[in-house]
Length: 211
Image 1 (spheres, rainbow, N blue to C red):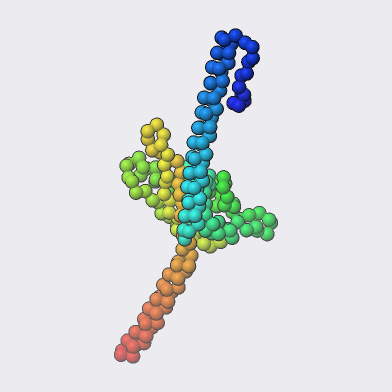
Image 2 (cartoon, helix red, strand yellow; image 1 turned 180 degrees about the vertical axis):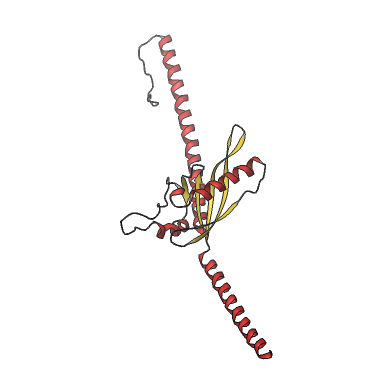
């Protein structure tokens, strides 16, 4: 709360008072240098943090799938554009001007856009795997949105250190749109079934002719 640039200037005083003023000024110089040193370290740390944040944002924007980072309470900490695109149609307004689902955004709950039970179950499984000492921990599930999109959801934890032990402080969701592949598989199965039915019919006709 003091002015670090202020220095004591005393004229026509005794040697003792002048000596005391010199000590105060030396302490002020040391305090000022300490402040500069701390400010410099903070600036370097902030620059490093900004660089890491920029690198992370660039990496996430290049990923082909949607990515959402949440804490253990389900609060969204980070997401990329691909994830936002997946939920854009799911948050459109209905006839009575109410959204069908929540909007993806920082600080919002992941449970407003995805079903709670699969996320909670996946997080519980990750906790069990962590306590059992497993290192590779990824939970997989399929979730269908109200728009009909079928998403493959991969959940992986991230950790923080507390009292010398690592605890799960959040999770990363990667979202892959499987709708077209599922539709393609369904069409393929229908075509195969249709071919089998046609062949069965032809076989029945041949059998009847032989009979």
